[in-house]
Image (cartoon, rainbow, N blue to C red; front, side):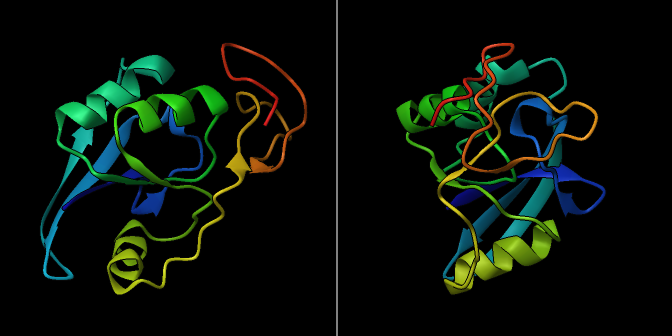
Length: 134
């Protein structure tokens, strides 16, 4: 199993489309066997699902994520665990133990702006290809 986590300074990065790094974990028999941090700079919203697929990722742990990215990940066959915050390593350990707390309905309705926080539901904005609709 290969797990990717949106990654920044050891934490789950909170905006999938702005993610510059992923931490990739190889896991077998319920344990991490190896991990590495890879750069995704220049990939952008539309290409990130393909980037993850090219790395053989089965499952993605992330914070907020827009509807378009959700669709691209589903089409790539990547299981999504959104709405996660905290340490990346701890999140993967929890996933492997079956105790990861995540919100399947988490959406980031638009790009981060002053005061914007990703949340469950939608604020209705439609910017830069990220739909504000659920």
